[in-house]
Image (cartoon, rainbow, N blue to C red):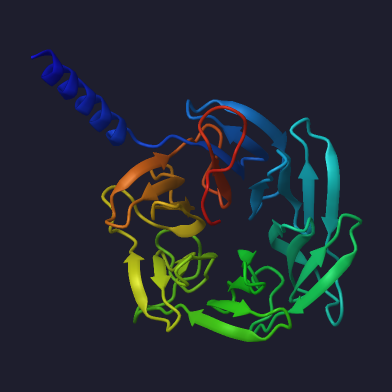
Length: 317
């Protein structure tokens, strides 16, 4: 009977391990600081950041790329030494303000920055020199709403969330639109705002999957959508489809290699998770709610491995 008993124990342990929910560190900004929270809920690292930021990155070298003022991107070491900074200024026909809502460190060491107000994407080298400029087409210009999440794709194109226009657009390096998807109201009446009772097409985030589809965090559209190249919705998550969770301002997106999605749920209220991981059959396998460290304005976050050195969880973001 001993081999059978060993086999039963082994299978039980394996089943238990598989059933354990994932645990992550969470790097995010709210309540006047950027903080890294461990899986035990305790702060492992923090730095003052009084501005409500909209993008954040742990870089492969261990430094952090942070949004430290409306138009400033800062690279900071874990020791809180600033090693690089870029501040966007009005350019071209823009005589008003500039805001930055998205940025990305590229493989060649340059940094992509989306400049709302200037209606452009720039790539900036280590010396702060702009080495590439990509114009954006904006129907309703607004320095606060021209863009939200922007990512440069492996193809060299740019996936751009245009909040004010309610569009996700893919631009080539010349600024030509090669694909777009427009969010819709679905027959409902628009109700401006951020909370769960608002409603609109103010899109926040989008990531391109390996299969060519695009996953969209709808902002105050209160939905997550996956659409194909023809614009057909092939998967969706609606506002009240998950038990105990009500989607409000849908922001952060991670597309994990196993197909799961990590979703940011901003402005949803104190009883709601600020982040959750959901499977494609719509089962929540992890959620994060820490109102001691972060509040209801947690718009941007990144999940890291649960222990050991700081390391971003693999996935498209």
